[in-house]
Image (cartoon, rainbow over all chains, first blue to last red; front, side):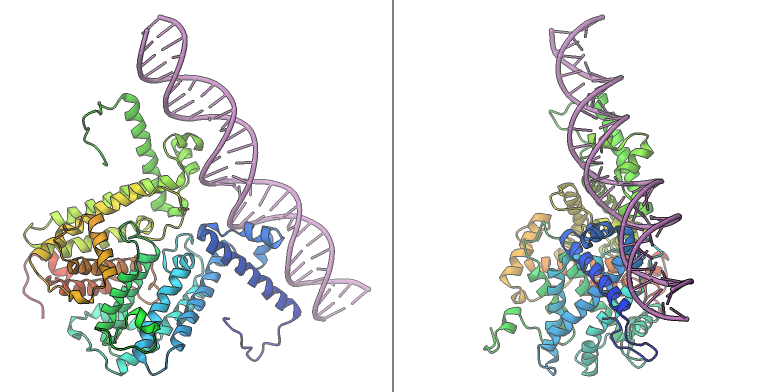
Length: 260
Length: 260
DNA sequence: TATGCCAGTTAACGGTGTTTACTAAAGCGT
DNA sequence: ACGCTTTAGTAAACACCGTTAACTGGCATA
C-alpha cells in the first residue's frame, strides 16, 4: 500500500521477503480484527501470536512492540478511510462540485460509524502510546487522508464560491500557524490566501467535532440519533461555503422535483 | 461533594462510615494522581493498593472493579471542571454577560490544557470501559457541567442577542432530538424555541471540536501552537451569538485604548 | 560445503484484573 | 460483658499482558 512501485536499485522481492511481507500482513490483519471486536485495549501481541500458531516473542521479528503495531495499523486505516472517501467522491460526476463535497463529507461520517473502534484510535487521544513511539507512518497516512478533502476545497476557493473572511481579524500568530499548516499538509501554494486556510481549518474543526461527538457517544444519554444533528451541522458548514446542501434522501433519489 | 447535606432519615455518619468514606477518597485520590502521571492506562488497582499498603483484592470492598473506579473519578473530574469554569465566571462582574462568556469558554480550554489526561478520559472515547459498566455517576456529573454553560446561554437568548436561525430548516427528527437534549439536560423549558437549542448544540460542537483537536494533538505536526486557532474559533462562535469578542491580552489589562 | 543470517522457541521477569476462601477485628444487641 | 454478625483485609490462585535473553534449526548465500 505504502510503496508498491519498485524504484531503481530495488530488485524484485525475494521469496523470503515476500513471505515476510505476508506474515506482517497477517499480523496486522488479526490485530485489526481484534481492534474491531474488542477495542484498542483488546489488541495484544500474545493473542495475535496464539491465533497465528506461534509464540509472542516471535512477533518481535516483525514489529518492535505493541505500540508500533498500533501505529502501523493506524496508518493502514487512514489510507483506508481516504480510499473510502475517494470512492464515494468518484461516484458522483466530477464537475458537480457541490454534490461531491456533500457526498465526501457524509462518506467520512459513514466510515466512522461503521468503524468506531478504528476511528477512536485514529482521531481520539493517543491513550495507549507512551511518548517516544515513532508516529511517522500514521502521520504520513493522516496527511494523505487530509489531501482527499484539500483538492475539493481548493476548487471552491478557485471558483470563489464564498466570500473570504476579513483578513484583518487574523493575528500574525494565527497567520503563521495557518501557513505552517498549509505548507506541511501540502494544501494550496504560497499564493493561496490565508483566509482560505482559516476557513478550511474552521470547517474541519466543526466536522471533526460533530463526528467525534457522535462516535465517542457523548450525547448518547440525551439524544437517540445523531444523524439529524450531523446533517444540520453539515448544512450549516456548506451554506457558509456557498455550497448547495442537499438532504440525504434527495441525493439517493436521482430525479425529483424541488421539495418545498 | 455529591451529597453533603443529610436528608431526613439519614442519621449522622457513624465512625465506620466516615473512615470508609476516607479510604474511598484516598483510593480515588491516588487513582487520580496515577491518571495524571501516566495516563489512563497507568491506573491500576494493584498499584493503588501497593501504594496504600494493602493488597489489591481489598479494594473490591470499595469499588466494584477498575472500570467503575474510572467512572467514579470521571464524575469527580466533571464536577471539578464545572467548578473551575464557575470560578472563572464568578471572577467577572455578574452583569457583564459578554465577558463572562468569553472567560468561561477560555476557562474550559485552560482546564483542558492543564488536565490533558483527565480531559481525554472525560471527553474521549470510552476506550477502556467494556459495555455493561454503569456510567451513571459520570453522566450525572457531565450534566451538571453542562448546566454551567446553560445559564449563560439562556441569558443570551432572553436578551435576544442574536437572530434565531430559520426554523424551517429544522427537520422534525432534528426537532425531536433537540427537544430531548434540552429536556434531559435541563436546558430552558418547553417555551424555549428549538432554534435556540440548535444554536447551542452547534456552538458546543465547535468548542468541543477545537479543544479536542488541541488536547488530542491531531494537528501537532503541522501547528506549533493551537491557541491562535482556538481564539479564532472563539471569535467566530461569539460573533455569531452577538457577543463581543475580546482578545486575551486586553482582558488581562483592565483599561486600554482600542487596538488598531 | 561451510558460514552466517534469521524465524521462531523456551524460559523468565514483572506487571495486570478478578475470584475464592479465609482471618481478624470492629460493631451491636442483649 | 458476652456472643453474634458484619465487615475490612489477606493469601493463594487463575488467566492474562509486554518484553528480554538465550538458544535452536533451517535457509541462502559465498
